[in-house]
Length: 289
Image 1: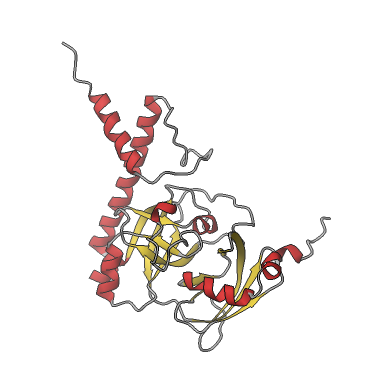
Image 2: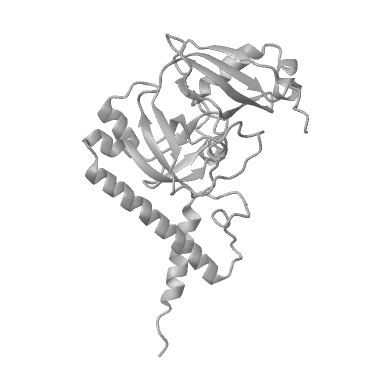
Protein backbone atom coordinates (compact mmCIF):
# COMPACT_ATOMS: atom_id res chain seq x y z
CA UNK A 1 0.00 0.00 0.00
CA UNK A 2 1.44 3.36 -1.02
CA UNK A 3 1.97 6.02 1.68
CA UNK A 4 -0.07 9.22 1.54
CA UNK A 5 1.78 11.93 -0.48
CA UNK A 6 2.22 14.46 2.36
CA UNK A 7 5.08 16.16 0.50
CA UNK A 8 2.72 16.93 -2.38
CA UNK A 9 0.18 18.43 0.04
CA UNK A 10 2.89 20.59 1.60
CA UNK A 11 4.00 21.74 -1.85
CA UNK A 12 0.44 22.74 -2.83
CA UNK A 13 -0.14 24.65 0.41
CA UNK A 14 3.16 26.54 0.31
CA UNK A 15 2.73 27.37 -3.38
CA UNK A 16 -0.72 28.78 -2.64
CA UNK A 17 0.68 30.90 0.19
CA UNK A 18 3.42 32.31 -2.02
CA UNK A 19 0.94 33.02 -4.82
CA UNK A 20 -1.03 35.26 -2.45
CA UNK A 21 2.04 37.29 -1.52
CA UNK A 22 2.82 40.47 -3.46
CA UNK A 23 5.03 39.67 -6.46
CA UNK A 24 8.62 40.86 -6.47
CA UNK A 25 10.56 42.25 -9.41
CA UNK A 26 13.25 39.95 -10.83
CA UNK A 27 16.68 40.09 -9.20
CA UNK A 28 19.79 38.01 -8.92
CA UNK A 29 19.60 38.17 -5.12
CA UNK A 30 18.66 34.98 -3.33
CA UNK A 31 16.24 36.91 -1.13
CA UNK A 32 14.44 38.29 -4.17
CA UNK A 33 14.59 35.35 -6.56
CA UNK A 34 11.54 33.22 -7.09
CA UNK A 35 11.22 31.25 -10.28
CA UNK A 36 8.15 29.12 -10.89
CA UNK A 37 10.34 26.82 -12.98
CA UNK A 38 12.56 25.96 -10.03
CA UNK A 39 12.68 22.30 -9.07
CA UNK A 40 10.42 21.23 -6.23
CA UNK A 41 13.17 21.05 -3.55
CA UNK A 42 14.19 24.66 -4.21
CA UNK A 43 10.60 25.85 -4.02
CA UNK A 44 10.06 23.98 -0.77
CA UNK A 45 13.25 25.47 0.64
CA UNK A 46 12.06 28.95 -0.32
CA UNK A 47 8.72 28.32 1.37
CA UNK A 48 10.42 27.06 4.53
CA UNK A 49 12.71 30.08 4.58
CA UNK A 50 9.76 32.46 4.31
CA UNK A 51 7.85 30.59 7.03
CA UNK A 52 10.83 30.80 9.38
CA UNK A 53 11.25 34.50 8.65
CA UNK A 54 7.58 35.15 9.39
CA UNK A 55 7.85 33.17 12.63
CA UNK A 56 10.93 35.12 13.76
CA UNK A 57 9.13 38.41 13.14
CA UNK A 58 5.98 37.17 14.88
CA UNK A 59 7.99 36.01 17.91
CA UNK A 60 9.79 39.34 18.21
CA UNK A 61 6.56 41.33 18.00
CA UNK A 62 4.86 39.08 20.56
CA UNK A 63 7.79 39.59 22.95
CA UNK A 64 7.62 43.35 22.42
CA UNK A 65 3.89 43.44 23.17
CA UNK A 66 4.48 41.44 26.36
CA UNK A 67 7.28 43.69 27.63
CA UNK A 68 6.24 47.14 26.34
CA UNK A 69 5.93 49.82 29.03
CA UNK A 70 2.29 50.64 28.22
CA UNK A 71 -0.61 49.77 25.93
CA UNK A 72 0.19 52.51 23.40
CA UNK A 73 3.84 51.52 23.08
CA UNK A 74 2.82 47.88 22.65
CA UNK A 75 0.97 48.60 19.39
CA UNK A 76 3.03 51.57 18.12
CA UNK A 77 6.08 49.59 16.98
CA UNK A 78 6.54 46.45 14.90
CA UNK A 79 9.22 44.58 13.01
CA UNK A 80 7.82 43.91 9.56
CA UNK A 81 8.81 42.13 6.36
CA UNK A 82 8.89 44.77 3.63
CA UNK A 83 7.70 44.36 0.07
CA UNK A 84 7.40 47.02 -2.66
CA UNK A 85 4.15 48.76 -3.43
CA UNK A 86 2.82 48.27 -6.95
CA UNK A 87 -0.08 49.72 -8.91
CA UNK A 88 -2.54 47.28 -7.36
CA UNK A 89 -2.35 49.45 -4.24
CA UNK A 90 -3.42 52.52 -6.20
CA UNK A 91 -6.53 54.01 -4.56
CA UNK A 92 -9.66 54.41 -6.70
CA UNK A 93 -10.00 57.42 -8.95
CA UNK A 94 -11.24 60.38 -6.94
CA UNK A 95 -9.18 59.48 -3.86
CA UNK A 96 -6.40 62.01 -3.24
CA UNK A 97 -3.48 59.56 -3.55
CA UNK A 98 -4.76 58.03 -6.80
CA UNK A 99 -1.92 57.76 -9.32
CA UNK A 100 0.79 58.57 -6.75
CA UNK A 101 1.75 55.16 -5.36
CA UNK A 102 5.41 55.71 -6.34
CA UNK A 103 5.43 59.53 -6.21
CA UNK A 104 4.39 60.00 -2.61
CA UNK A 105 5.46 58.82 0.83
CA UNK A 106 2.50 56.59 1.61
CA UNK A 107 2.91 52.98 2.77
CA UNK A 108 0.57 50.08 3.46
CA UNK A 109 0.86 48.94 7.08
CA UNK A 110 -0.99 46.56 9.46
CA UNK A 111 -4.18 47.64 11.22
CA UNK A 112 -2.43 47.64 14.60
CA UNK A 113 -1.05 51.07 13.68
CA UNK A 114 -4.56 52.42 13.19
CA UNK A 115 -5.31 51.22 16.72
CA UNK A 116 -2.15 52.98 17.93
CA UNK A 117 -3.22 56.22 16.24
CA UNK A 118 -6.64 56.06 17.84
CA UNK A 119 -5.35 55.15 21.30
CA UNK A 120 -2.60 57.80 21.31
CA UNK A 121 -4.84 60.43 19.65
CA UNK A 122 -1.97 61.23 17.28
CA UNK A 123 -2.31 64.48 15.37
CA UNK A 124 -2.61 64.69 11.60
CA UNK A 125 -0.50 64.07 9.60
CA UNK A 126 0.02 60.56 10.93
CA UNK A 127 3.63 59.61 10.37
CA UNK A 128 5.50 56.31 10.44
CA UNK A 129 9.26 55.98 10.83
CA UNK A 130 10.81 53.09 8.89
CA UNK A 131 14.29 52.00 10.01
CA UNK A 132 16.88 49.40 9.18
CA UNK A 133 17.58 47.04 12.09
CA UNK A 134 21.24 46.41 12.81
CA UNK A 135 22.08 42.73 12.54
CA UNK A 136 18.59 41.86 11.27
CA UNK A 137 17.99 43.75 8.03
CA UNK A 138 19.81 42.18 5.09
CA UNK A 139 22.99 43.67 3.58
CA UNK A 140 22.49 47.11 2.08
CA UNK A 141 21.76 47.11 -1.63
CA UNK A 142 23.97 49.43 -3.64
CA UNK A 143 21.77 51.89 -5.54
CA UNK A 144 22.59 54.42 -8.24
CA UNK A 145 22.72 58.09 -7.20
CA UNK A 146 19.80 58.58 -9.58
CA UNK A 147 17.54 56.91 -7.04
CA UNK A 148 19.23 57.53 -3.69
CA UNK A 149 21.23 60.64 -2.81
CA UNK A 150 22.36 59.17 0.50
CA UNK A 151 22.39 55.85 2.33
CA UNK A 152 19.75 56.36 4.99
CA UNK A 153 19.19 54.30 8.11
CA UNK A 154 15.69 55.65 8.67
CA UNK A 155 13.08 57.82 7.03
CA UNK A 156 9.52 58.92 7.62
CA UNK A 157 6.28 58.71 5.64
CA UNK A 158 2.53 58.42 6.00
CA UNK A 159 0.01 55.58 5.79
CA UNK A 160 -1.65 54.73 2.49
CA UNK A 161 -3.91 52.20 4.19
CA UNK A 162 -3.96 49.74 7.10
CA UNK A 163 -4.61 46.58 5.07
CA UNK A 164 -1.19 44.93 5.13
CA UNK A 165 -0.92 41.50 6.80
CA UNK A 166 0.23 41.65 10.43
CA UNK A 167 3.87 40.81 9.66
CA UNK A 168 4.25 42.89 6.48
CA UNK A 169 4.53 46.43 5.17
CA UNK A 170 4.55 47.68 1.58
CA UNK A 171 6.77 50.65 0.69
CA UNK A 172 7.24 52.85 -2.39
CA UNK A 173 10.32 51.89 -4.36
CA UNK A 174 12.10 55.18 -3.57
CA UNK A 175 11.88 54.37 0.15
CA UNK A 176 13.33 50.90 -0.36
CA UNK A 177 16.19 52.35 -2.41
CA UNK A 178 16.93 55.05 0.16
CA UNK A 179 17.19 52.41 2.89
CA UNK A 180 19.06 49.94 0.67
CA UNK A 181 16.33 47.31 1.04
CA UNK A 182 15.32 44.29 -0.96
CA UNK A 183 11.92 42.58 -0.82
CA UNK A 184 11.62 40.39 2.29
CA UNK A 185 14.11 42.46 4.28
CA UNK A 186 13.00 43.07 7.86
CA UNK A 187 12.54 46.67 9.02
CA UNK A 188 11.24 48.40 12.12
CA UNK A 189 8.15 50.57 11.71
CA UNK A 190 6.89 52.80 14.50
CA UNK A 191 4.41 55.61 14.96
CA UNK A 192 6.36 58.89 14.87
CA UNK A 193 4.89 61.68 16.98
CA UNK A 194 7.88 64.01 17.44
CA UNK A 195 8.62 65.04 13.84
CA UNK A 196 8.58 68.87 13.80
CA UNK A 197 6.62 70.97 11.29
CA UNK A 198 8.74 72.27 8.44
CA UNK A 199 9.41 75.90 7.55
CA UNK A 200 11.82 75.52 4.60
CA UNK A 201 13.14 72.86 2.25
CA UNK A 202 15.91 72.88 -0.35
CA UNK A 203 15.51 70.47 -3.26
CA UNK A 204 17.97 69.73 -6.03
CA UNK A 205 16.45 68.59 -9.35
CA UNK A 206 18.40 65.86 -11.10
CA UNK A 207 17.64 67.34 -14.50
CA UNK A 208 17.68 70.96 -15.63
CA UNK A 209 14.77 70.02 -17.92
CA UNK A 210 12.42 70.46 -14.96
CA UNK A 211 12.82 74.24 -15.05
CA UNK A 212 12.97 74.40 -18.85
CA UNK A 213 10.02 72.19 -19.76
CA UNK A 214 7.56 73.44 -17.12
CA UNK A 215 6.19 76.97 -17.30
CA UNK A 216 5.78 77.39 -13.54
CA UNK A 217 7.95 74.79 -11.79
CA UNK A 218 7.43 76.33 -8.35
CA UNK A 219 3.65 75.91 -8.60
CA UNK A 220 4.04 72.33 -9.84
CA UNK A 221 6.39 71.55 -6.96
CA UNK A 222 3.98 72.91 -4.37
CA UNK A 223 1.15 70.86 -5.89
CA UNK A 224 3.14 67.61 -6.03
CA UNK A 225 4.53 68.03 -2.51
CA UNK A 226 0.99 67.60 -1.22
CA UNK A 227 1.45 63.88 -1.81
CA UNK A 228 4.22 63.82 0.79
CA UNK A 229 3.26 64.00 4.46
CA UNK A 230 6.89 64.63 5.44
CA UNK A 231 10.40 64.82 4.04
CA UNK A 232 13.67 63.20 5.11
CA UNK A 233 16.99 64.91 4.41
CA UNK A 234 19.16 62.83 2.07
CA UNK A 235 16.25 61.07 0.39
CA UNK A 236 15.52 61.21 -3.34
CA UNK A 237 11.85 61.74 -4.19
CA UNK A 238 9.96 61.82 -7.48
CA UNK A 239 7.21 63.86 -9.13
CA UNK A 240 5.30 63.04 -12.30
CA UNK A 241 4.20 65.82 -14.63
CA UNK A 242 2.92 65.57 -18.21
CA UNK A 243 3.95 61.94 -18.42
CA UNK A 244 7.53 62.68 -17.32
CA UNK A 245 9.10 61.62 -14.02
CA UNK A 246 11.42 64.12 -12.32
CA UNK A 247 13.77 63.25 -9.45
CA UNK A 248 14.80 65.57 -6.61
CA UNK A 249 17.33 65.25 -3.79
CA UNK A 250 16.15 66.58 -0.43
CA UNK A 251 19.23 68.62 0.53
CA UNK A 252 18.18 70.68 3.53
CA UNK A 253 15.21 70.93 5.90
CA UNK A 254 14.35 73.57 8.49
CA UNK A 255 11.81 73.35 11.29
CA UNK A 256 9.19 75.85 12.33
CA UNK A 257 9.17 78.31 13.96
CA UNK A 258 12.90 78.66 14.78
CA UNK A 259 14.34 77.51 11.44
CA UNK A 260 16.61 74.88 12.96
CA UNK A 261 18.25 72.31 10.69
CA UNK A 262 16.47 68.97 11.11
CA UNK A 263 16.77 65.47 9.56
CA UNK A 264 12.99 65.17 9.08
CA UNK A 265 10.05 67.53 9.02
CA UNK A 266 6.35 67.59 8.29
CA UNK A 267 5.18 69.01 4.98
CA UNK A 268 1.44 68.42 5.15
CA UNK A 269 -0.53 71.32 6.68
CA UNK A 270 2.66 73.40 6.96
CA UNK A 271 3.54 76.78 5.49
CA UNK A 272 6.85 75.62 4.06
CA UNK A 273 9.08 77.63 1.71
CA UNK A 274 10.73 75.55 -1.01
CA UNK A 275 13.90 76.48 -2.85
CA UNK A 276 15.42 74.92 -5.96
CA UNK A 277 19.17 74.39 -5.98
CA UNK A 278 21.11 74.12 -9.27
CA UNK A 279 20.20 70.92 -11.10
CA UNK A 280 22.52 67.96 -10.61
CA UNK A 281 23.23 67.63 -14.34
CA UNK A 282 24.44 71.27 -14.48
CA UNK A 283 26.99 70.90 -11.70
CA UNK A 284 30.63 70.40 -12.59
CA UNK A 285 31.86 66.97 -11.64
CA UNK A 286 35.16 66.88 -9.72
CA UNK A 287 38.10 65.91 -11.85
CA UNK A 288 39.54 62.49 -11.21
CA UNK A 289 43.13 62.56 -10.02
